[in-house]
Amino acid sequence: MTRLRIPLILQCLTFLIPLNIYAIGKGMGSGVQWALFRYQDSYAGVSFISVINEFGYVLSGMITGRSALSLTAGLCGTCMLVAALCLILFSCQGKTVTWVKPASILTIIAGIAFVISCFLQYGIFLNGPAGFVIPVGIPLVFVIGAVMYTGYYRRILPGDDEDDNNEEGDDEDDEDDGDNDTGGEEEREALKDKEKGASSGLPINKYQLIFLFLIFFLFIVQYRK
Image (cartoon, rainbow, N blue to C red):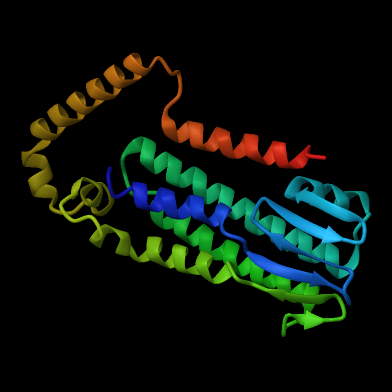
């Protein structure tokens, strides 16, 4: 269980790090983009634009052409990161690393989508008539996905082999011999979780709280004026 905290922290970082810093045209404005929103300072003023707003601009036809394709690719990347976070939360709740590798694949695909978004808007050299962009955080998305995919995070906290057994499923004979012991341990862990839940008085656990906080933060950014 201890090792699962590392993928959870890494996945949350993908929403906290700025993906890119960009400039619009010739001095028309500049901004910083995160996975869920962007901060933009232009001739129209300072604004926070969420991915939901951007999706509405594309659907309404307010933004068309390459800019619309760029926003759509970025939105796909954000959806991949949200799906990856959900898989990590499922792994933490079930105390298994089964969903960590699929989450890492989604994270890498999200990084590819963000790169495509930059290419569509600013060109293959990230500099063109629309301005320029510096993808400061996109390489970190690839690094986070690679770390989770290779399982390198398990080497950081040695001695926690419970997750490895859940993922690999090796040594079937040993598992058959120790079914009773494993079942007893799982029952004791379940009782401990119930006692913790009863003592806290919360109907949801901490991983669901993280997801709810993410949704709440997104709506706060969307309706900020």
